[in-house]
Length: 228
Image 1 (cartoon, rainbow, N blue to C red):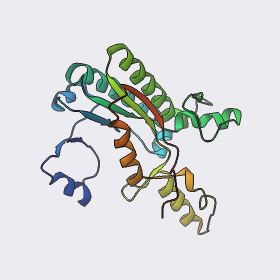
Image 2: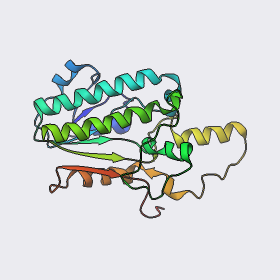
Image 3: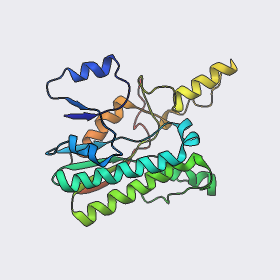
Image 4: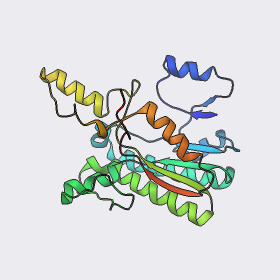
């Protein structure tokens, strides 16, 4: 297993690197030459890399659009040239259809795969991440059809876990509550809006390992059952 990881190397991550079947490569995936270090011959590729974080959507929207799009194109070009027999999973986002509620006050839940993808206001940097994920889905769908390789798409809805940092839904919700020194119950009972990373890890693997399908698109909205 090869891990390409520019993030924080904490104790959990260091423990992973001790495993004999794990290798680490630290590169900038927006640079085409970096992909030469990735190698070839992989059965499954999990593409999770992106400039992410709610706060970053507002601060650096252009960089998100540019770097993530270039990285996705590089990934597809590498797959075509070096790893055409492997299967790749592209991690999209629920952001791409969430704008339908804001724009039209209409979003069916559970949400079907063929839901229209909506950006309510292209001038609002809030939707930069949604925009780049829409482009990413189109890139992977049409590249797979045109060049005949296997791929899947997932649209996860609000991951949370102990190593997510402080710039995502749950941490920011907690930080806001602490600053106001008040208790908020707005998310307490919304059990189906959030996905534990431990749960999604196994779902992601099971989607990738389906040998009967060459091209799949999946939406993961929430937990299927309550987790204690």
